[in-house]
Each structure stands twice: as structure tokens, then as C-alpha cells.
Length: 232
Image 1: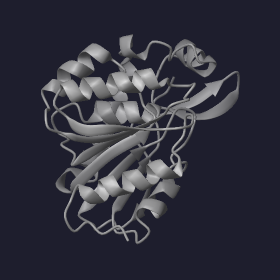
Image 2: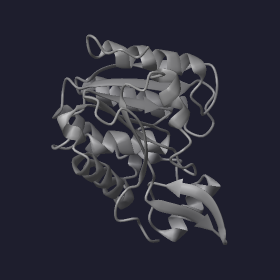
Image 3: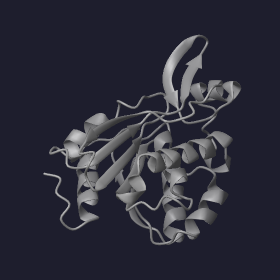
């Protein structure tokens, strides 16, 4: 499968602002899906928002199903569409995860976002790639937000997270999520907590989504990471 060489994005808000937010969508979605978050969290448009587009076109039997961050192999993509691929994520460490994480870091460098106060996050598969993107030198975000994500590449993630103790994160997950079970989110939380990261897992009654209550909590978390950050 052909992978885009560079990540495209939708940008919103204040491009000259000193605070940037990079957002990664989920499997089968596209970069416009999470744009409404910005207008709710930051109605004044004071932050520099970047909604990145996954580098792989999700296609099977001639039908396009949106975009994906991984896997890169066509047979594995078919398994992903059927739901089988994601059953044991903790044991998986697909090359596409690393490639997408690297591409996110390259995007951040290309637009000079490392020189700003940077927040990186995503939903579902986008949350997995967001975590991957900041587990390496070169990207030191002010915070990481993980919406309905899960632990992937468990052993490597745990090892790399321990070398970055003290990083801050926000995590949310539905108690009735049938796509990525809550247990997988708890495993991610445990790994980050054991590594000395500072954050909390916010659970909500519901499935694979970002409900209003989580958006409100995420807004409060973002505002609380910096004195004087005005999101009104």
C-alpha cells in the first residue's frame, strides 16, 4: 500500500499563537472529523490547531473507507476492517506504527511546532500514534491527550515511557467500548503511571466516542497546563 510521504493537515485558529495543538483522527476517519473539537475547546481561536491526515488510504475490494495510520500491508488492512487485527494490540508492534509516529514528528519539525508550547493527541488509532510520536527524543510536548486509545507495542512502550518520566497526559475511555475495550485503556494508563507520567484516566458511560463531558474535561485540562492560557 502506498503511504503519503508527507502528512497533510487542516489548520485552524491562530497560526501565530505560542500554543499549538496537533490532533490525529481515528481508523477509517479523516482529518476533518475532529475539527469541531477546536471550536468547542477554543471558541476564540487563540491556539494554533493542526488536524493531521493519516498517510494511508483505507481501501478494500474497490471501496474507500477513509484513512488509516497503520497497518501498511493490504492483507493486514483487510483484517483490520474485519476487526481481527486489533484483538491483541499490546503484543503488536507494526512497522506502520513507527512510520506514522516518525511522520508526525517530521510534521511538527516542518512547521516549527517544537518551538511552541505543544500538545499532541488523538482519538482511537490516532491516540496510539500520538503516544508513539512523543516516545522519542525530538518532541517534548507540554501534554499528551489520549481519547479512546489503547496500549500497543506494550513492552517497547513501557521501556520508552520510563525514560521520559514526568510527562503529562489526559486519557479518556468509555466503559462500554466494544471496539477497544476499557481493559486495554487501563493497561495503557498503568504503563504510563508506572513510568512516572502525570495524568489520569477519565472513564465515562458509553462506547467508542468523545462525549461532551470528556470535551469539557479536556478543555479544563488544557487550560490548567499553563497559567494564563485563555480558552474563552
